[in-house]
Length: 311
Image (cartoon, rainbow, N blue to C red; front, side):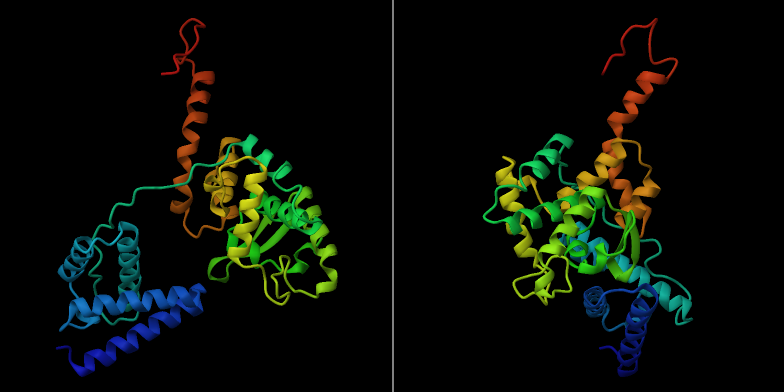
């Protein structure tokens, strides 16, 4: 069994770690709760050793146990990331001199990005899917939401949390509060601003602090409520509803920017990714553009002016 002093020490170290995440990294409550749960699960696996006494072999056997239990690779990778951050924190605090996760490779995660809508489908969604709803307000809400999602690449949580005052600041940029409370500026197109302005003007008598009010104007529209709006827009545009979601629109935004020459660093800033590695998953959409660039411009890509073999 773990010694009482070790249990108390673990509790103290975990508490300090979670406080650091909140104070220095702006980690949300749900993130901190998930990390606390992950550390508690690993502590159970390590017993009678305490967390601060865990060895590299304990980490390896823990991940093997998760694999045998059928846990998804993405979840296992997240738990390993939690452990790495925790033990690096303990090293910085001089609690221990080594990191037991250092030699442990993360589980391989197969990228499963959704298929983006093409530009014609986006145009159809914006021009046809946002018209002819049951009332004028639903048309305006649909237009504002889809314009903002596609032209800014916002997460759905970021969109629904936009204050009504966001359109009062004139200029080409929109201030967005993303994950962990991190703020970023994203360009706002004229059509998106006009749609948002129209919605704020229509809802001015509600007294809501939100750009997209819910049934209770003091609360913003729920994710479930937004999904119903998006479903109606997809059906009106004649698109498969299973292919239209907030994440697909965000992915389409990123894919279309890359296809038209945007660089990864700029895309990282626009999407609000903390790590460039997250943004790199979008580079798969660049392969065709790069192939065409080589075919068109490389001096050895053509033979005496003959057309390039597409294969």
